[in-house]
Image 1 (cartoon, rainbow, N blue to C red):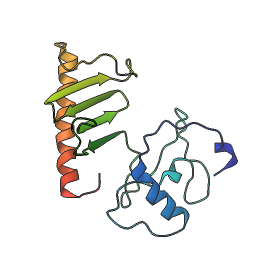
Image 2 (image 1 turned 30 degrees about the horizontal axis):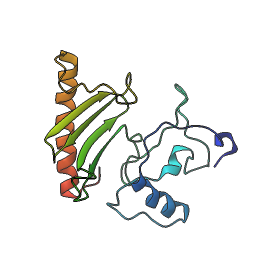
Image 3 (image 1 turned 30 degrees about the vertical axis):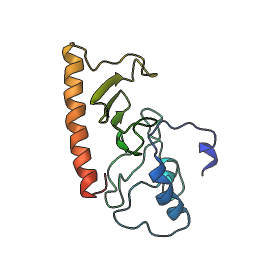
Image 4 (image 1 turned 135 degrees about the vertical axis):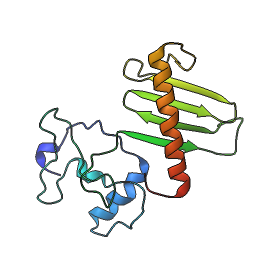
Amino acid sequence: MPKSMIGKRNEDFTLNIDLAPTLLSAAQIPVPQGMQGKDMSTLYMDNNNGESTKSKDNNNLRRVGDDHTNEDSTWRDEFYYEWFTGDKQNIPASLALVRRDSKYILWPDYDYEQLFRLDNDPFEEKDLFKSQLKTNQQLLDTMKTRMAELKLQAASGRPM
């Protein structure tokens, strides 16, 4: 890591699935095609010369390469997750789409949905799922549609 990056905070979304590609890259082992996750070192290192990949306009760190084949995209701006344990009573199943500004959650065991605007409610205290405001309804429609797309993509085994 460049000394200039030590102690810097990065707000990009990283997930536990990013650990394997990061460790493989650090060990200079090729990341298998189709492996989920991304090499996190690209958030603070340029693979060519060890310089940081800091964006000049907003001082945020950006990654070049969203997956192992497309080197022109930026780091993820959303993620989809599924949680299933088989223990409905203690840890119910959930599916969610998380973005910087919003979060949509589906609790399939209880046929219950939630919507939060994280930009002004970071602690998820005000559920907007039943809100009648047009902007909230538009956001809900957008989030549900995108989550359905990502769920299909996940089921097909294609990297997201």
